Image (tube, rainbow, N blue to C red; front, side, top):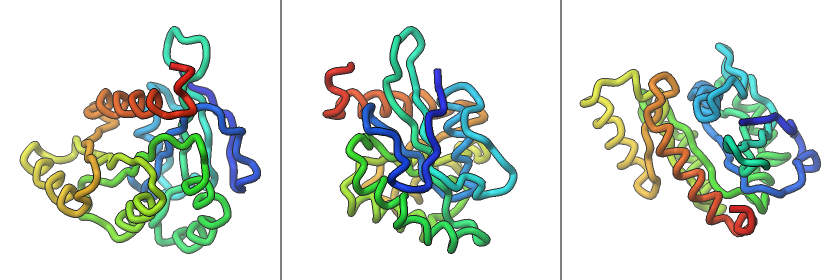
Length: 201
C-alpha cells in the first residue's frame, strides 16, 4: 500500500521527518522506477524510456497490508550519469540532494542501484564513497539480474564485490522478482532498528 506525498527540489520542501525513510539512488538508466514498482507491487514511480526524467526527490508513504498507519517512506532521488543531464543534475546536488543524504534525521537506509550487466562505473563509486563518508547505511542492489545466465551473473556479482568490498550486494530483477523478499527483509530490519521508529514497531 503506497501513496505519493511530496516532490522536493529544495531542502525547504522536504516533508516533516517522521517515519524511517529508504532512499533509492542510481544512474539514470539503472531501472530505479522498476525496482520501486516491483517492491510495492504497483506502478508508483513513473518509468520512462528517456533516462533522467526524475528531477526531484519524490516521497511515498508505504503501509503494510493490514496495518492502520504507514510504516516507512520511500524517497526516489534523481538519477545521475546520463550524459545530457549529468552536469545539470550535478549542479543540483548541493541544493537539495546532498542536504537530504547528509542531514535527513529519518534516513534509515540507502539503496544504491547498479546495473549488473555493466562494469563498475566511476559515478557509482563516487556515490558509494559519498555514502561511506556521510556514515549512511546502504545496500548495493544489482538490477536487471534476469538478463544474465547463472554463470555470468555469478561472475558479475564477484566483480561488484571486488569493486565495492564494503557493500552488501543483492541481485535483483523487477521482471522475475528475484531479490524482492531479501530487499524487503533488509528494509523492515533497518526500519525497525531505526531510533525514530522504535516506538512504532
